[in-house]
Image (tube, rainbow, N blue to C red):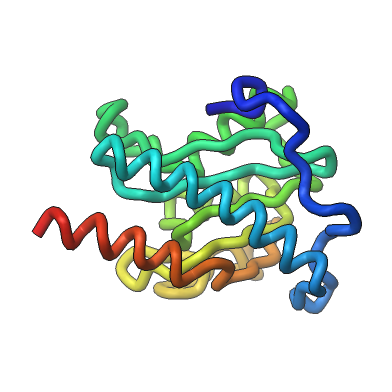
Length: 178
């Protein structure tokens, strides 16, 4: 569901801002990160209900929610329909610009190589993810594409926000299918 469909003013608590240059979030930043990650977890639960791998993503700008999505690879028969790809496309269309400067991407699972590449290409300055993906994660687990100094853009990464909830949602989903 898009921001337009959800209605209402979707903004973090007053005073929440970007993380400091050191990457350490202050209390207001952490509260905002948890608020938006909770929203991404809602999207992940929707994906699970549709038999999709439960990953959700939310794109937030200075004025609040820009776009939100969940995995749709099975539903769309599209291997690129990851939550991150979908939310980046929707956000860019809504903003009328492929550069997503000044925005934060929240995703419940560490992005894969495809999604990490798209995050870099979209010039997203800040990525917040819930749990690591030891089999496909490219933002610290296998490699760190979004921080690679050879590229022309690097992303600030905050990991572990609501990690237990994100990990349990994934574990439960796959447990039911074994």
